[in-house]
Each structure stands twice: as structure tokens, then as C-alpha cells.
Image (cartoon, rainbow, N blue to C red; front, side, top):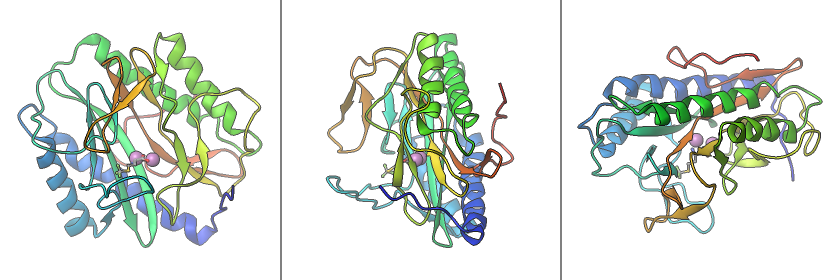
Length: 264
Ligand code: MF3
Ligand code: CO
Ligand code: CO
């Protein structure tokens, strides 16, 4: 495993890419309403990235080993879909919860972030899943400082999810990010404190917990990408790209519309 330490020059580029990724979510928020299709959301984001931001949508044609090229520019995962939902003709309806995951490339560097959106009136249990998962993300972020270890992040996330009666998806994790969309290290959203890689200033990685209302098991849909809960329970995910600083962390994907984080 080789974990890259970013230079000041690279960090500045990661700041720009990160903020732009967050701004795509700000842009799309008012369009997330009952009646729109996920394909239309994809088109709107694609055009905003390419024509307004002059960024490259990293998912489009992304083809890691063992996968067919991803056909769209964003990921849209609805209700029991965990992640990598492929935009299509599906129409959003009142009560849906939706994750939109955006990754842009600017000046050669990636910014990767996702949020949950509630469509119209959402049942309290579904809203709560989204809120607790956001808390999981921020409890993980608060563990980021030099000398702490990846297991401290995973443990904080897992404890909070399970304390609330939820489960953490094991098959997908956060990841190092920079010139590459996905690089070392793997950032697990479960684990034990005091274990795993020790964090150092200049590391950049995502934290992106996927939390299921029911059991942790997953299934893949026939499109080769969409991941769903095996038990059909609801699932939520939030993601930020993080820099390890000399004293703690910097969240690179914050933008004007990001919901506030917190310190415990
Ligand atoms: N953005 C996702 C992540 O957080 C990866 C999506 S890969 C795609 O790592 F091909 F499905 F877009
Ligand atoms: Co990611
Ligand atoms: Co992402």
C-alpha cells in the first residue's frame, strides 16, 4: 500500500476540486422534487459541470477492473439502493430518500462528495436514517488528526450506527483520492480504535459511510453497478473529501449549501 502525501500545490488543487464538487450538489438541490427523473438530474449536473464549471464528471465511462464503463455522470441511489445507482427513467416520488454522489476532476485532481435529499414529505424513520448517517460521517471526520488511526474513524462510525439500531455496509469504503479517483488507503466505516494506518498531514481521503436501516447485506442489480440492500431496507450515505492537517482536518468538499457539521 502506498499512501500519497500531497504537496501544498496539490492541496490547493484539491481544495478547488472539492469545493466545485460540493457546488454541484448546491446547484441540483432545487431540482430534487417529485416528478423529475434521475436521468434529468444527471443531465442537469452534467451540463453544469462541463459547461459552467469546466470540470470533468469523473464517473462518466469510469471502468475499474471487473466493471463495465459507468454510463452516466452522477450516481443517484434511491431508498433501498445503497450506492452507485445509475440515473435512468425512474421518476422521483413523494417520500423518497435519494443520495446524489458527485465526483469532479479539475486541473487533474478529484473532489468527491455526496448528500441525502428528501423528496417532499418523508416518513420520520427515513428522515432519521438520513440524519444519523450524517452524524456518522461527522463523528468519523472528528477522528481525523495526525497520530490517530483509520480504525478510530471506522469505530466511531460503526458505534453510532449500531447504537441507533442500524448496520454499516462492509463491501464499500472510503478511499484515498487525488490524481486518482480511488487510491490507497481504504477507509473502512467499521473497526476498532487504535488499529490500522496512522494518519499523517497531507493525506487526502474520503469518508462515506453507507448505513442500512436493516441488515448489512448487499446485492448487485443486473446493470452491473447499482448496489441495493439484500433485505430491501432503506439505506443512506453521506460523503466528504478530507485533508489531514497538522492539527486535525480540513473538509475539502464544503460549499455554501453543505449542511453544517459538528464537533462532539
Ligand atoms: N463516487 C463514488 C465514490 O464515492 C464512486 C462512484 S464510481 C461510479 O467512491 F462509477 F459509479 F461512478
Ligand atoms: Co468516494
Ligand atoms: Co462519491
